[in-house]
Length: 98
Image 1 (spheres, rainbow, N blue to C red):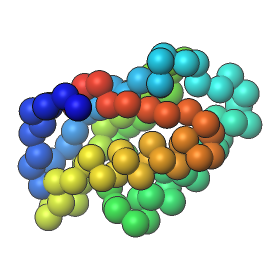
Image 2 (cartoon, rainbow, N blue to C red):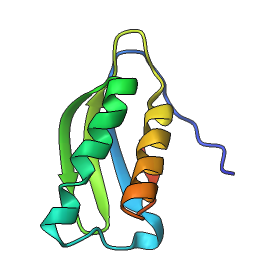
Image 3 (cartoon, rainbow, N blue to C red):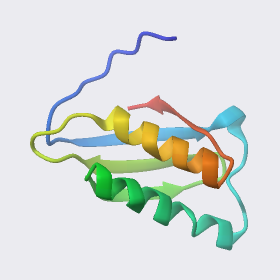
Image 4 (cartoon, rainbow, N blue to C red):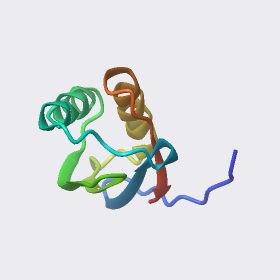
């Protein structure tokens, strides 16, 4: 496993670029795309964060999150979201830039 250096500061805003597993395309079907929001919102209830922006592109996403003041654990949130996508959409995301 790579040894990433990640800045983790409670309550700050982070920009992420996340690519699909083996750069597989996201679903073109708008019905499938609407499944993203419930997965993300489900985990936002467990581990709150603010979504400042989210762009879904064919093989990756860009997003900007702000974490709560006393929390710096964005990796836990990505783990929950990736698991939800893998189970519900059969698409696995990997963080490439954070």
